[in-house]
Image (cartoon, rainbow, N blue to C red; front, side):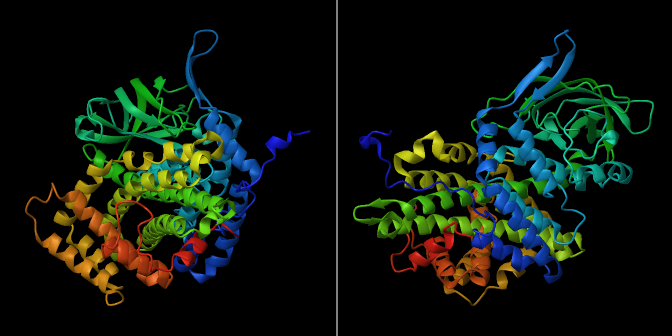
Length: 547
């Protein structure tokens, strides 16, 4: 019998057993907006079912266990043979299997596939973000492989399979396969042109032997990896299978696993190649151009992953504040807390709306819309830069809304905080994205034309947005010291695009708040500083996770 002093009152119930997709009005509205009517009902049903799975107590427990039981490296077996295996907790395999079976690697060959997958990715990575890495890389490998039709014909059906097969066997004996990527090296980091790994041609056409290393190789138990190495003709992209066709293991020496701040359920390794067999993907000397399609797709996933973390953090904060009472009433009804919650909800909505618009552009570009393809050239790095930058302050503020409870591991908020910087760092950190935007502006004028057409669709609807567009054009016209101003410019690009999308698609209260604060300057330096005259209550209610 519990002691009377330990009676538990005034605590929010756990946020479990709910539909993560249907409870997210912003995400569900984006799916309805961007999908064709003939696929909408099926997609909505699939996503809602997946949302209920993600929100279930059992799956939430899998996420906790996967995070608390990180992978372990086993370099040798009991007899001293080199095996280079990484062992994962069963919950990791359960999560990854559910993600594969939900189509998180199968976007490329079905109508509206990128929007459907993006929404599912936002839903699923709220459970445990670590398993998003292999799902993202497998999905993103497809455009790179398509530069080599024979390889694409062989591997694409495996990568887009909705069957998870984690056993180490030759890929042609498996029901499905996962892919990883190895680009960075110790001496170069983001400067992949400084790579020193060498590729020596073998007798069979298109095959090579690799010698060198990769400083960061995530998901090292994948079936294949796209890596960069120096062939006689220059930096080239290669496919490195984990297991060779005869069943022998390729030389893939895992030196150690990284001890990371977050993303702990996912293995990130340092690997060495020493006579490693590989197949060339694309022409020699065209490695960066070959792999750039994969990089762009993973960068979108960084924006989606950040939007997912923000949504889960805001959902937890609003849920807690809805049930918690303080100073004579519900915490969510207190004017200052309402301002904080509304401000975070606004940031989360802008992130999700932008990321889903970029996903829709992928579908349109795949269908042959060259204007949308040009739009992606600016929208992907701008979204990756800005959405991921906004993730950490949003998640940290949400944890503060739970008070001391939010600082305790059992709340789940510390896991979100540790995860929050990751998407800004991976796949090219902030400066890399900002400089990529500059390259697009300087070399691809159609990209800016497509961007301006997109934001121009909202002109005249809000004077603050119109003013921000005008200021952006002035900024673009002044090229003096452009590199040092690159972050400022990309921030403005992203904010103007978010504002234009919210003016067109969000409720008036949301669009008004965004234009007033993010574009009009009526905002402080921390969350909770929105103009008090805005309709804050409706914004908080919109963010409340009720399905």
